[in-house]
Image (cartoon, rainbow, N blue to C red; front, top):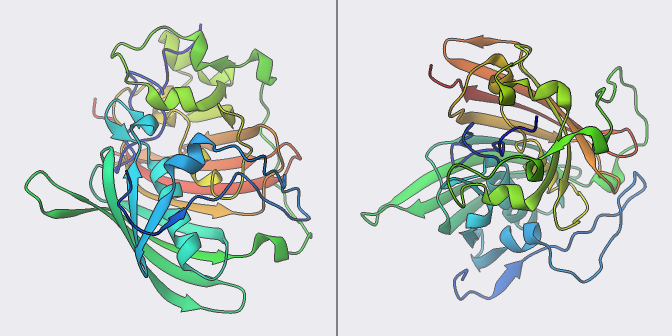
Length: 322
C-alpha cells in the first residue's frame, strides 16, 4: 500500500508531518541560475533555455551589496510551512552570488522561527576569503504581523569550486540497496490529502519511496529508523550542487518508521556537497541511530546515477510528541 501523501521537509523550522506529503521588490539584479553544471566529474552541462520551478522560486534580487530580496513560494510548503531544504537552497543561492567562489562545500543552518510564504530579506556577510575557499554567513528575515523583523534562519557556509577538485576517491561507502525505481512508491499512488492544497511540494518532486521504508503508512513501522527513496524534480530539472541542498531534506522523517507520528521540526542541519551530481535520478538514504531526550539525528547520503556519493548531511530534529 502506498503511503498517504507523505511529508517533505519542513518550515523555517523544517516542519514535517504525517498528515500529508509531501513580486520580489523593484530592485535591479535578479540572481536565477539556469539548471546547469559542468565539470570533469559528471556535471550535466545542460542549459536548454527553460525556466524551472526550483530556479524561479529560489531567485533572489540584489537590493544593495550583501542584501537580497526574495519571495518564499507557497509551492514548496507542507500545509502552511515552508520546506527547510528549499529555504537552505534559497540562502545558498544568495551566498553563491555574494562570495567569490561558486559552489557550496559545507553549509550549516540553524532554524530559529517558522518561515511562511511571502516576502523575505537575506543579509549576507563575508567572513573570510581564501584562494580555494571563501566563508560567509547569511540570515533570512521576515516581518511579523506587528511589523517587527524576525530572523528565521541563520547559516554559516564555506564555498569553493567543485570543478577544481581532484578525481581521487578513497571510500568505504556504498550506494544504498534499494528497489528499482519502478517498484517504489510515489505520491501519485496515494490517496487525496486530508487537507486540500496541503501537499503543494509533492507536486514539485518526483519522490519514490523504497517499499522497505513505508511500513509506517500501513500501521506497521519497521522500528529501524531508516528512510530511502529515489529523488528528482517533477519538471525534469537535472540535479546540481544547489538543488542538493533541497534533496537532503526532502524525504519523510525517519521517526515515522520508529512508530512516531507528528511534527518533526529541524533544529540544525549541516550539509556537505562533495561533487557535481551526474544527470538522472538520485538515491537518498537517511538513518537515525539515536533518539534520546526528545531529539533525534538524521544522517543522509545522496548518491547520483554514476554511483558517486555527492552529498552528506546530518540534522538534529525534535522528535514528535507522543
